[in-house]
Length: 392
Image (cartoon, rainbow, N blue to C red; front, side, top):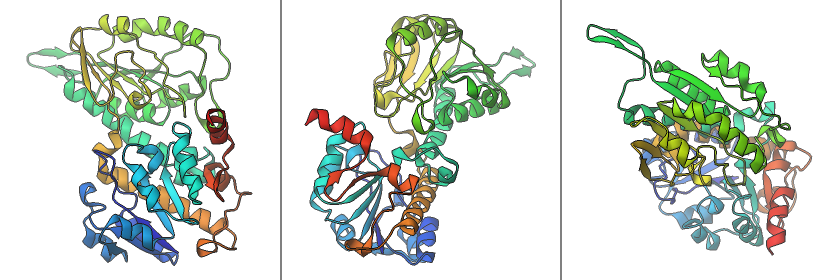
């Protein structure tokens, strides 16, 4: 089959869906690869490197869609509603689309693509199971975000992170508070510790305490009674507002005494819970920094504005909307390996029949089934259908 990779068109998106090494993985499996000219240039991968690994170079976006049986993207239409709609006129029935598509947040885009007769796979829906770890692009990008968030905070903080004994006196370490100990949160903990900060972390799920402590941070235990906070597939689930209110009350002291707060709490397909209120921000020391990794979903901080810097009572609040794109070389490397592994798995499990390349997805396979959003002209993923149908 022919695998096509168009350039990303989302503003500021510098990642590429495949890097040359990933092209080689697909070529070894017998697939041809076509990439749009310049697809990896902003990530540090010129066309020549793709050619060396066996990829053909297409001159423009329409050519990629015309030639390819499979289209791989970082941000598909659903994850780029402002610009991705232009791809609707380029796709054709039976074509396979894979990438980030935000089907739970933007089900209408999934519905429009479904009507085009494509096979739509959304990597956000990857199940958190052992055999899917190498395909989990969401976790890979969260790793990049957690790392980059701490570097952003360190750059903006008017003090240094580590404890230092100098001839001019002792410099006390910065205090960093990480809210959410998922993949991004744990990477933020590890990065802040490597920089020498004193780190505390909190998560709804007590099970992550051991992971936080293994990285040298203190796990903040808030005495709240709550139901299991882990949702299906290993992702966090939303709690009710009464719980979040109590949570904010207990967190207020820790936020006030922190130099840096990094928030990472997000629930797939839902608005991020507000955990840091405006009053909590105003109680922090001037010069403190908040980095809100849930900015694209509304933000964990009440004052966050996506892709903007907000100053409140001397506190800097950063709401980066696409941190992985700020480290495109390695973000593309990780994403490319994830999506290539996913595609090879899906194709290996697939049956044969009518359609593009005889592709028939194996719905008995958990990875294929859980990531498949649309086929045969309709949305087939139960969770996406549940969001879409009440609105129709």
